[in-house]
Every structure is written in structure tokens, then in C-alpha cells.
Image (cartoon, rainbow, N blue to C red; front, side):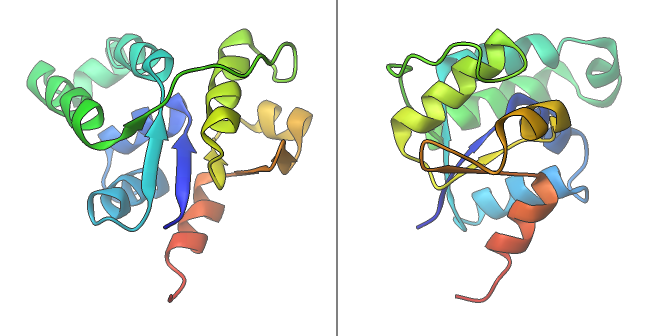
Length: 142
């Protein structure tokens, strides 16, 4: 099964709409089309992100809580043991990329264009892709 590490921006965007690419990716995960890998760092960052006014205007506290609980129960949570510094555009992105490398996922999915531009399409064996690209990958017939 394909494994993917979804960046916080993808997880957050997917909670707002089931029809945008991140939302379709989350639906595919719920349908067991791929293994979702994450870290406690990403979950903490997601909790902070979903407290912002934009997300609070679209999601009830119960929806946020249920989604976080789903991630904790159903996603594969990996530790950050690989040390990566100043590879990405922000220290938080270095932590996310380190967790993805540590987990040896197939794909790191992000909507962060500066990160994609700086790191490129692959890092330490992990393919970096946009949500649209990943959606195309998981929608291909097996």
C-alpha cells in the first residue's frame, strides 16, 4: 500500500471541504486507498492551525476534535528521529520532512510551494508532491 505523510496545510484544507484536492485525499484515506503517516508534531501544529478564525468559522469544535481523534486512532504516528536542519523553508517543515524520511513514506504531500521549490521533487527517497499530483497517483487503477 502507498504511504503518505500529509503536511499540515493539506490536513487543514481537507477539513474544510470534501471536494477540494486535500478533502478528496482525506476521503481516499478513509476509504483505505493509502496509509496516512503523521507525527505528534504535525497533530499539534494542526490543532493550532484549526484554532485560527478562518477554520473556526467553517468547523465546529466537535468537528475539529473528531478529526484529531480520527488521526490519533487511524493514522500511523511516527517519531522524529532523523535530524534535518535548514533543508526546508521553515524549521517546522524540517520536522515534518524528518518524520516522513524516518517513516520511509512513498510521498510527502504539501501545498507549500516555497518548500517544493527549495527541496525539489525528492528528498532522501521520499517523493514530494502537491495535493493534485498525489490525487492523480491514488486515483490510478491498480
